Image (cartoon, rainbow, N blue to C red; front, side, top):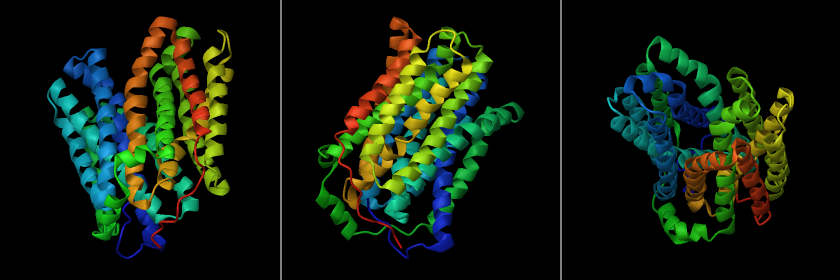
Length: 409
């Protein structure tokens, strides 16, 4: 990663910057999940079919993947700060523009553009954050950033956006969300050290491009494992309610409450195991053990016989997502960052996130639907456990190491 230059931030200024970085990513989570919360209003206004709405939601995942890939290279080449500021301002603007669309074509186009700039923010936010803190604190900081995406995007976002949608309309809800994002990006513009030039650009050219990164064992493995775990997220969220209602005959309202365990498990696992990774310093063995445990819990959840109590289903789902959540920050940020020279860190993050978004979020839900149609939804859930088990095997080939400190103070 191209390190930030200027006066190294310290004390309160450092933590204001880190808090603003967390806040930006939390609001991106709100923008990403908001359409699902106001879907009934949008579908009714435009007269969309379920397939058309699927296109609206799926389009963002594919453009997000490419945004993360190319922005990682840009952050290494020109610096994390300019990449973050440009992508952040564009995200705030495009989030507001979604409220102005007048047709399905405009809505899909706006979501495609929004996905590209939101994806671009991720490698810039995480590379800036990992440059600001010591290596022994990286796991916690990245875990907090990822957890904020879920907490604000879903836990707070679900009641907030639905309330705004009912009170002021779904268009105004999108416009309102863009305001705090714009403010935080401007704050980072003022506080983040400016990106340096010259020597860092030469360093970036010297270490090579994507071809060099893809020949790095850890980057390739981190990308494959990211696909496994992000596909698990979207399999559970896309088909979880159907699995509970159709296979276990759980009422829809109760199924929604039970699926809340999925989110709680992911958030708690991300935070707890990020701390464990920092305390132990081990990456590889944590990935392998957590993947193995998650696969067992996922298989038990998928194969639970009809009549299994709600408490047992919730418990197995919780631990499936709890153990899985601990792997996400390691695969998406920590291991890629520590496996390459600093001048390539953001590019490495971008590659792992491209793979996870394009294949895990974009293609695997389609595969899950095909499996469900051919074999039944029980096997769709089992697919999530199988790919996580595959991640445990892939993790055995990881090289366990920490990169050099790139802290700014």
